[in-house]
Length: 433
Ligand code: DLL
Image 1: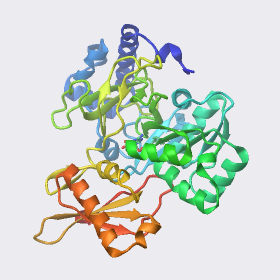
Image 2 (image 1 turned 90 degrees about the vertical axis):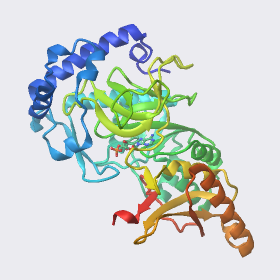
Image 3 (image 1 turned 180 degrees about the vertical axis):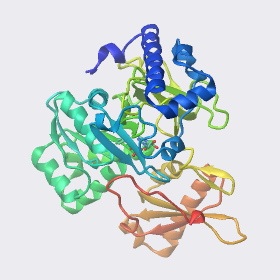
Image 4 (image 1 turned 135 degrees about the vertical axis):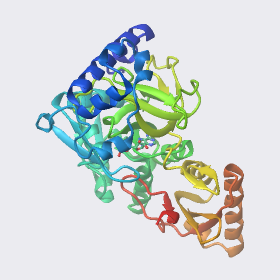
């Protein structure tokens, strides 16, 4: 089922017309209503009349996270605060919080794109959904809530945490859909086992997982452990929250709803487009929002994009899974390292658990040290030292051959690494403290 077939399957020509009209209207709207955008556009010598087609987007300045922080709390809003129906705050992955707000129409839009997400994942009206993303200032819980209401699902608004209760809700109410972070989905496997439940027999058939990077290997792990289809959902508070892009059952990229969020993929250094299919930074312009529309917002998320029609019938452009962030990437001895690369290696090695942490440190006058903490299964940990060393050596070699950087590997007992009910903390960079 496709929630909004007209928009999601539109041919390129008509889509371009709609995007062009909407971009023009958005630029005119922020020019009139947001003094900060007006001065930014004036500085570029641009007026709304210069925006005749979506291709004119290249004339517009970028918006960065710092623009939001510098104008904290409401400087980038195009609506007086009394017109907002809801305000959310994102702690972000680095730095100060960012504030976003929704008018009533924005909330309707959020419900619409989230209904598209849920349908795209395979939900059907009247399905039961367990929403185990945090409710509150984080956009995960309420975003899923509005989409589920719009689609006519039966909602179990569990919010995150209280894992035993989550599992009881699942056992007793038998929801078909689970929405939470992928790391929480894996964490729940352990708890389920301890409670004597068989994860493969759970009622969850479809998972809608996102809010943090996760690898293909982690997907496989979740799918096998829970015996469910694990789909990827992408979004960010600044743009709307969850609801920007979602995988269909073919898992061949995330469908990005480009009639409302216009995507570009650029080289983060030059700001110029990369070729289709090549990786770069995702930039999004919201072309139908009212509260805080953003022009060419630099997400810092690294993706590639393709434009062919999908087997599911949708024509929307598809982005790859998020390959990392330009700012979460750690640079160790000059080499770019994404936690997801290490996760991929670990999940391919027998006996390791998908729980890991990277610790980067630099002692005075010395080179960066990257230490990888990896949990191993109980039975391996009680094996003789020689075997443990062998496993350590194997992990070390594989990581070094993928990253091309020296690492130290430390195997730790099950449950040593802190678990997360929301976004997992994978990197501790002691060089910054
Ligand atoms: O995480 C919105 C969300 C909630 C998305 C629930 C999906 C599900 P923020 O807290 O503002 O919003 O964080 C946004 O999280 O820029 C990405 O770096 C990261 N992120 C979000 N979804 C994914 C994903 C929500 N599927 C930031 N894969 C984004 C990888 C993701 N990273």
